[in-house]
Each structure stands twice: as C-alpha cells, then as structure tokens.
Image (cartoon, rainbow, N blue to C red; front, side):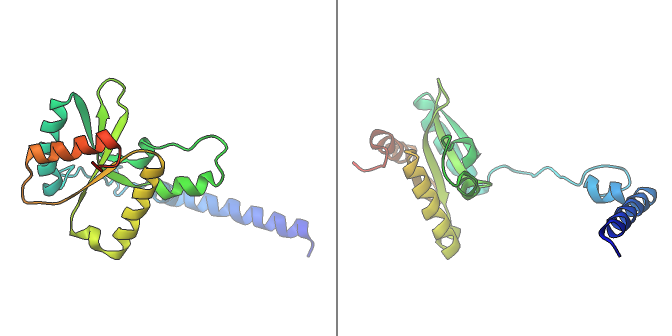
Length: 178
C-alpha cells in the first residue's frame, strides 16, 4: 500500500464520520454544551457572590473604604490586576501561575481605579498544606508586583476602627509594618 492510498482512505473515513455525526445530530450535542433538547445551556445563577464570612467582612470594609473615598471590589481575578511586560521570558508559564486565581477583595483609589491593596480573608482552609503553598505563591507574586496584601483571619465580628488601622498601616508602608 502506498502512502497516497492510506491518506485518501483516512480522508474518506473522516468525511463519512462527519456525515454520520451530522445525520444523527451528535455534532450539535457534542459541541453545543446544551443539556437538553430545548436548547438551553445548563448554567444556573448562584444564590450568592460572597460566603457568609466574606459578606460580613465586606460590610465592614465598605464602611472603611467609603470613609476614605476609595473603591472596593470583590472576587477579582489576579489577571485583572497584574500584567507581564513585553519580552518577559516564560510569559505563558508565568501567566498560568495566576490564571483562574481569585483575590477576595481589592481596594482601589477612586479616581484612577488603581489597585492599592489586596485583602484576603483567611478561614481554616488556608491552613491546609496546598493552600499554604498557594498563599505563599500569591504573596510572593504580589510582593514582586509591588502590590501589598493584607491577610485577615476570619472572625465572628470585625471592628471597623481596627480594620481601618490595618488598612492604613499597609497603605502607608506598602507592607503593613509600622
């Protein structure tokens, strides 16, 4: 058998396979992502954006931020606040390190919407070995990007004045040290 015959056979087989999928409607089912015959996609709206702990902390953060004429964003992708300069080596690999990573809160100045401070609310899941490593990596990435991060342990309640002092400490020194 020569290579031309083999190649022609493969092309014919693929063409027949495509025809079969089209005739049976399998192409549409396989590639549409639809879950039913009515054509609707299977997505459902969540009943919440923030967990109960995040929502409680968000309320306090909102008071503090409003007082200082700043903006507060929740559930922000790292890719939305970081970038890689042109010519960066291993850009694909570095981008993958932050891809699909989310930050709990980002504090921004109101005029330019420039990120000023990242705030992570750490519950007990942050004590797991995989999360400790993830948190360490994110801390390093943000440090090298010169964007401070405040890590707040989850508490039953938060005092706005204490939260404000922590935030102001980070904004004054970019690392929270006094």
